[in-house]
Amino acid sequence: MAGNFHERRSNAGKVRVWIGCILIAVSLVGLAVVGGHFLMPQPNDAPQMGSQSTSSTTPSSSVPVSQPDTKPKVTKLHSATVGVSGDILLHTKLIQSGYDAATDTYDYNNVFSAFSQFVSQVDYAVANMEGTLCGEDNGYPYAGYPCFNAPDAIVDAAKNAGFDMLLTANNHSFDTGMTGFLRTQEVIKDRELDYIGTRYTQEDKNYIVKNINNIHIGMINYTYNTGFDGNGNASLNYIPLTAEATSLVNSFSYDDLDGFYAKLSGELEAMKADGAEVVMLYIHWGDEYHTEANATQKEMAQALCDMGIDVIVGNHAHVPQPVELLTNANDESQKTLCLYSTGNLLSNIRRGPSYPAETEDGMLFQVTFVKYSDGTVLLEKAKVTPTWVNRYSQNGKTIFQILAMDDDSNWQANGELSEELLNLCQESYDRTMAIVGEGLQSANQYYAQNQAETETNLGIA
Image 1: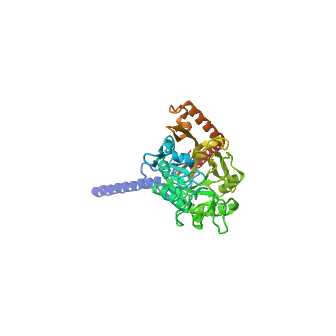
Image 2: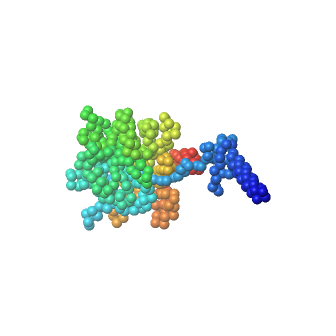
Image 3: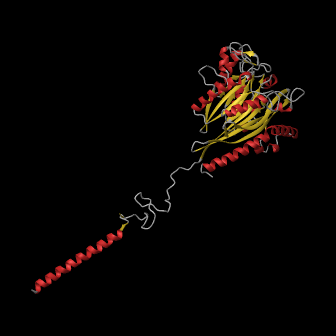
């Protein structure tokens, strides 16, 4: 009996132990159940009980859920500066200045020797090659005004100075006929320089979209013409063009500006289709030797702004003309920077009874674009470096040299310049900045403010 009692007691104790274990387990399960959801074991960095969980199964709470910022930050990626200088116009005395009788060759490298350091500071440099390169074996001698035919050496010197592109649409493009018109392009292409304004064949594009530091800049060059004949053939400087030549030069008539705008509109679309993110127009227009733009230029500039062109750079006046920031009439957020004339980079025109002192002046006009990681492209700033053509005699020979006056280079302290030359440079600097300074400052104030606002909206600031 005793044995059975102890056995039953022992069994009863086991039952009580099992019941106790079950009760403890139930209690633990109860503690682990919250709001009907079973909480799985959490890693050490997971939200604990009572903290806000981002799980989609967690009941909503009045406390806002903090989501991680997965949007990539916008950064400034690229910058590209285009520098545009004035007219390269080789008058007869200038042509002769590069001639070496001992070797029967021409060399104009010295002309650019003091200026090349400024050209090399920009990413892409442009100049207007006014006149033709017909050579001496095609019935035309080397000559200046009124029909320009310059030695090929001027292109060599421009390339050596750092220029990347020459503009070829101007009122002197046909001075030596079709032979000179085509050979000019051949010489430039042979030197591996870009050019726009004229074409060699119908299949060639009449614009360029240039990838400069990963910013795609569309560029096109136009010149005014002196009318069309009954067959639709243009004339330049009243020299009639053939039908073929008419189709190979970008020209417009002041008497048919609507036709010009319609043609240019199609070309703008083509440039954008080719990837252009901004567009620059180089245009030969205006009145010679006038330091103010005329009414037609201003009317055209506004129409070109309304078409969406970002930068307009003019030449032909042979003197500097003002800088102006224009507002698109259809979109106030769209602006166009217009420099009406760059002046002369190189010529033999000097001040006197017939010409103002500004004919000795020119500039390197610089525009800098920036590109952000979201694809936004802005015009960041503009700059003018005034230039002056120094002409002097040495060993019975006339020498020409381009001098530049850059605020950043402390040119006033240049020990190589005499006091007389420094004064002449200062006068040239003052003349040019009196023409372009106010408009340039106003434009840069806008660009600085626009860039700050854009970067704030992009989350950069």
